[in-house]
Amino acid sequence: MSIRRELFAGEVLYRQGDPSDCAWLVESGQVELVSVHGRRTTRHGLLGAGELLGELGLIDGAPRSATATARSDCRLLAIERAQFLERLQSGDPILRTLVDSLLQRIRGLVATLPAETALPSEDVACDDPTERSGIDKIRLEAQLRDALDAGTLEVRYQPIYDIAARRVAGYEALVRWALEGRGPVSPAEFIQLAEETSLIVPVGEYVLDRVVAVLQALRDGGAEPLPSIAVNLSARQLVEPGMARQIVARAERNRLPPGALKLEVTESRMLDYAPVAAVMAHCREHGLPFALDDFGTGYSNLTHLHALDFEYIKVDQAFARHMFDSPRAMKMVEAIVAMAHALEAKVICEGVETREQLARLRELGVEYAQGYLIGQAAPTGAVLSGEAARAGEAAAGA
Ligand code: C2E
Ligand code: CA
Ligand code: CA
Image (cartoon, rainbow, N blue to C red):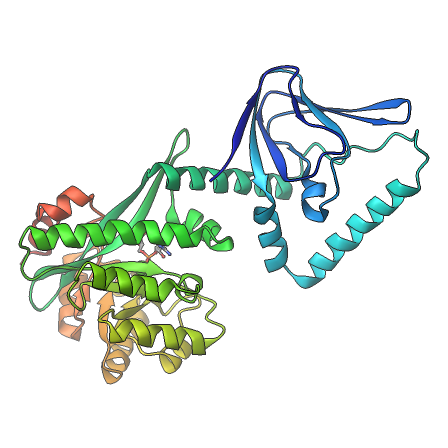
């Protein structure tokens, strides 16, 4: 949970010599830093919106080197030690060594200075664009924590169409975040941010909670057959200790039938296949099938298919997009379908936007289609009422 503090002009945020328990980001107002050495008082200047204070002590644990006092009414956001350390530890080891050595050098220098020497402020005004984007990230991360606590992330459901049966067979859960004053933030942006820290774990649990609740409501409402819902998981989430067991336990506790909950592996850096394979085997034994997401682009490659077992392969939307303008793309879709079928996996083609594409996929023996033709991600209500499925089936031209 993120901590915000509001101070009146004149209030002290922390005092010189206090332990460094967190750093602060100024959201509004101005804070002055003043240090006292012997009889000499040094004013380090005012910090305003978007500036950081107290970050050095956060990294090396040294006490506060100055007193921070609000000079106008202020709003500040705390940055916990873990937020910094997690990033430092996951960073390049060379960079880590550099940061350590720089810090030691600064602290060492300060220790050798005569008591009266003015200390440079540890907190610098920030107009470097890369540092700016770091501060934006810190802010975004805190806002994401708030959204999780307040329950304001929305989960939407994009229909997945069974081409042969001509019906909507399931949905993919896609998370949406409407940020006050900024509008909707693309999951492409904030999922990556969440993945850089352990925030991806609570985000995943949040989505899973919503999805299980929707599946239960559909089942209690007598939906027959019960549509399936696929949840996106990054490799990081998948191998998070206890995660797989927890997903399985949740499916069992709610007595979801096998196959109702599906897992899409979206990521990327599956460096070590052994733990991923073990987790997948555990989930599969308990009726949770896997799809390999975005196949054919980025990190979603043949090595994954060779090392791991997937029930479904999702062909990246780039292929559907270029099916008709590039004969090579068409050939590649044919080849991917043949390969998937040889591996006994079913194919879901993403990004289907026209009936022409759908007709061609039917000829190729692709099992499922997903895309704006069938429908965009719909709110829970439209899934529960069956409206999202009916609209999708009508648009596909059953
Ligand atoms: P994805 O899993 O590949 O999801 C499909 C994305 O393509 C979605 O974007 C969807 O809105 C978009 N899309 C679907 N059909 C069409 C189409 O016909 N045409 C076009 N142009 N686009 C289409 P979205 O919702 O912005 O999601 C972006 C990515 O964020 C997802 O890519 C997924 O990797 C990730 N994501 C979303 N929700 C979650 C989540 O709960 N957990 C995790 N770990 N990742 C998530
Ligand atoms: Ca996906
Ligand atoms: Ca995808």
